[in-house]
Length: 131
Image (cartoon, rainbow, N blue to C red):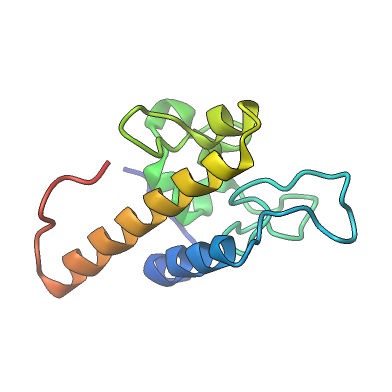
């Protein structure tokens, strides 16, 4: 497994991402309403947020640990994270152009990951495997 070089705490990062989405973070920008936003990339979760040069490799991001190995070299590997049991990814959901479904899938995935990490840190085992 690849180990991220991002020094931020993964639990805090996922909680902040969930909070961001729940507050409408991926809606159209008032400054650039013609430009679609991209989940994970257009939030502080991304180690390259606000850096058009993308100075940090995605391999340094915590989210890389959730990306299947065969997609870790993709241009946007975090968009290949399976978000549900059907294996749908951000890329799949963005191509389907259903913002609401995409956001719900990401929120569900984030909540599951947060719960799993909290359980691991408290020494509890999850009740069932989380997909």
